[in-house]
Length: 341
Image 1 (cartoon, rainbow, N blue to C red):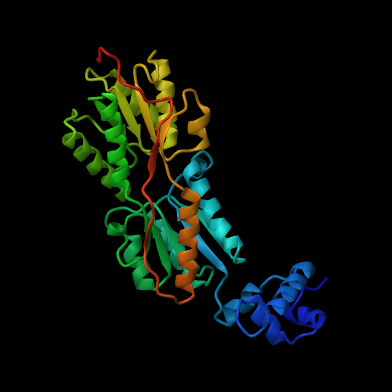
Image 2: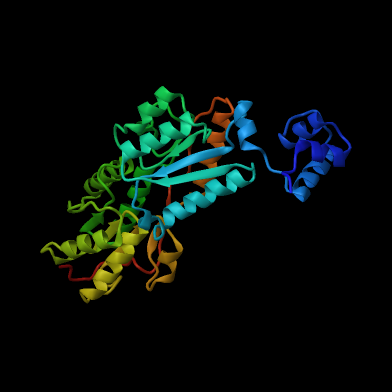
């Protein structure tokens, strides 16, 4: 069977090929009734845009790219990226666009992928995640003229538009909540120190402790995996100045911390309070359910994808600040034990 064409749709709809093109590309020139009839016929006969033809006419590839610098096995257990991708896909599906996803080991490999995709016309733009301070990807995108949107703080995004939220405000809310419960010794298990948002959280954590007169504590940095989170938790709970509360930079390390506390015969929250950054179903189904910072991650993905498509179409766009993550108290936080270690 031959591939359905615009001519096939035009013949069945009783209109010109130009009218079909207007209707399928969302351009004016046809009535709403005609547009709906043409779109219904296109769906019925299985018509899809010819990507090669779009490239030849300069209409774009119909795809955007996302490269992730994480171990591939990590993506399967990290809810953040699954939620982010779901939001991106929701936005792209509504526009008949595709997402090209690749996992790499580092920024040099990611930049090579971006150069290849852009040079071969495989994508109309890319979404950048996990920004570093002085991130080498940003100036490359600027020199290439490749449409790009950053999910991260604009301080590290250069001239690229960013989708971001106030990480410092969220951290202050957590520390204020724990201080109000009576905790004086609060520790934190952080993400990779090279990440720009980790640095923002580091500074906000230290400043919040000082502002509330709480003890300064160690902040071990991890790679977000459960193994690293467990090791960091054991060190903190084995120290002479054992914390009565720990804030974790993602849900996976928080869940690992909960397991370590039980392993060390500590009750949560009677002996130790736990807070996770980025709420997830995992935080809600464990016992006790974890107090967590919650935000609409799929909405962030959809917003970034929508901005990128507008930028790829030639529109001038600005970054978007989203609401800061908000604390959702659950069973893993309570006042500290009366006789703190």
